Amino acid sequence: MRAVVVSDTHAPRRWKACPPRVAEHLRGADAILHAGDVCVASVLDELAEYAPVHAVLGNNDGPDVAAWGAPERLELDLGGLAVAMVHDSGQARGRTARMRRWFPAADLVVFGHSHIPLDETGDGVRIFNPGSPTDRRRQPHGTIGLLDIEDGRLARAEIVPVT
Image (cartoon, rainbow, N blue to C red; front, side, top):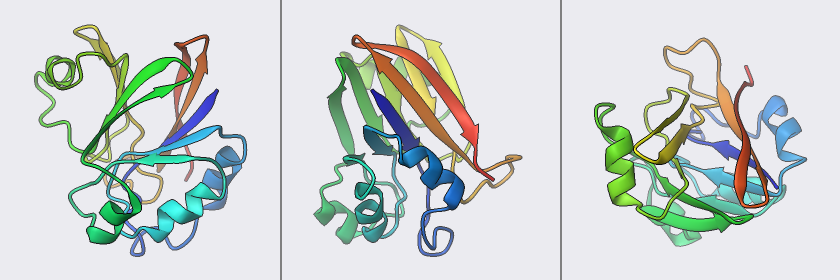
């Protein structure tokens, strides 16, 4: 199973339409995870044209994103892998321990908010922030994440530049 992970698309200010380099990866996706700050629900509808979408609310998301079905926190099974999602994971210090407390059953926690790509393991949990494809802030590139899940385990996680 291939999951494409995005966060902090900040439409319509930053995401006018799906960027071509993001769309290239979405075409092969079995699932799409959006870790919040979608800003307008139409982005989730656009992503859903490629694959099923799972999304959480970000601090810039309004009632339309909640009405679309995005909760503040989400736990799901992706190909046998226990995945949790939240937008804001809090400060960097103590993050893996906090994610383990918040999501005791999760193998992987996907989050956003900082726009800083991160793939880290600690306290018995892997945490993954794809960065932002459209609002890179102080990062050298806009980025997304790719997850390959095989037999209930995370076979590969990669952060991919798209700008």
